[in-house]
Image (cartoon, rainbow, N blue to C red):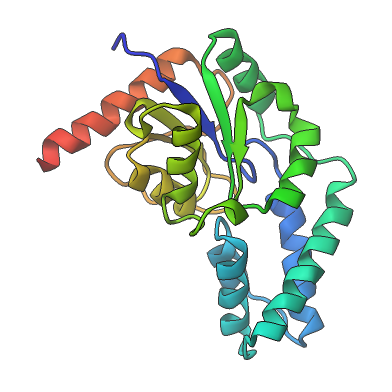
Length: 230
């Protein structure tokens, strides 16, 4: 294919930064604050979920009544704890820095599109470098976080491009659903959990060696799926 993406839309946690491990520490500590140990199955179900949804799922999973007061206190606990953890070094995912440099060298527009709230995303941007992104959209800046498509639709709107002309890079089932729901081509680089191999998604083991040709191939996979289901 000769078509180039109008923009590349990057997920943050688990895709560019290996920050899911920091969230793992915080959410497990939160469960212990309520007298429970979190199962790996429950923890994995939270990956990629927006903050409010993740908290409701957590408390449902450990059998705690999620009153508005409990949710509010838990949100404050997580923000404080994750902030503490993000003030230290945040590790990169393999190949992520080279991939960002490649996309910028190709003069492609970029947005960071994350379910993480703005106050915490700013710490991630400190590590990543704001110069890689034309803009960022966070989960607390739209009506519904991933798996709803809102964050991707908003990013495309702010960039002034059609979501169908964008490639999204994601690591989780939740994020992949959001990107596909917005109409983006999707490249999946699984991190902590498996992502279903749904038609139209391109899978990679890492971001190592990512090229513009790979971005174009994501369009081909998405369009083949659309043709097959038409």
